[in-house]
Picture 1 (cartoon, rainbow, N blue to C red):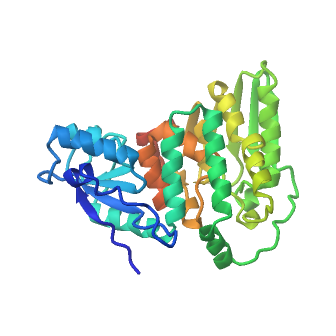
Picture 2: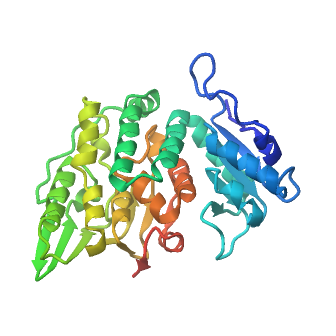
Length: 355
C-alpha cells in the first residue's frame, strides 16, 4: 500500500504532532516520516518562538522529518537545521546545506516517502546514525556506523533484498594484483586494478588496498599519496557477489572498523589525493571522501544505494560524506540513491576539483 506521510506545520510540530510512539503495538515502524510545511504563509512558519519550539521537538523526534519550502528559509533556518532534509524549488548559490533544490518539490517528497516506506528500519536507523555521530571523533563515528550496519545485516529488509537477488557464485579470483603500487621519490601512487569488475570493493581488493595505504601511514618519508583506479570506473562499490556471505556479524563489524580503508585514508588526509572517474558507487565515494583532496573527472558520477538494500553505507560514508556536504544532503543521497554528477558534487563540496 502506498505510503502518504502526514503533512504538518511548524506550529503543529511545536505542539507535539511528531511525538507519537515510533513503533505500533506489533513492533512495526509506524509512520516513519512526516513532512513539515515551511512554505510562506504556512502556520507558524514566520513566528520565531514557534520555530524555536518546533526545532526543539525536531531535535528529539524519532521520525524522519522532511521540510518543504517554496523559497529561501532565512529565519526558518533555526528549524531547517534540525530537520533531516528540506526540499526547495529555489535555486541560487546561497542555498544552505540543509536544503536540496529540486525542480518539483512534491515529486521529490513522494520519492523519499516511497523509499522510506520500502525500507523503514534502514531509513530510521540511518537518521539515528547521522544525528548521533556528527559530534564524535572520526574513529568513534565509524564504529557507530558499523554497529548499525551489522544490526541491519541481520534484519528483514536486507534479508528480503538477498532473497530477491538470489544465490550467486563466489566472485572469481583475480588474475592480476588487485592493487598496484609505484613510488617516485617521496610520492606513492596506489591504483585499484580490477577493471574487469569495475574495481568492486570486495575482500581481496580491500585487503590489498589497506596493505598499500599502510605502507604510507608507516613511512613518513612518503609525503604525497595518489589513489586512482584502472579501467572505466574508479570503484563500483561493494562486490554484490560477496554481500551476505559473512556468517559472523560481530567479526564483520571488526573487519569494517579495523581492517577497512576509510580510517587509513582519514589518517593520510593531509597527504593523499584521490582521483575518481566513471562510476563511484558506495565505497567508491565513501572512502575517497575521507581524503583531504578529491579530484573528479568530468564523467564521474556518485551514488549511494545501500538503503534500498535495507542497509546504510558501511565503508565510512555516514561519517566522511556528511563532513563534506552536511548531514541533510547526505540524508538525501543515502535515502533516495540519487545519482550525483561531478559538477553538482563540486558545488556541494563532495569533491574539490574537476579535471
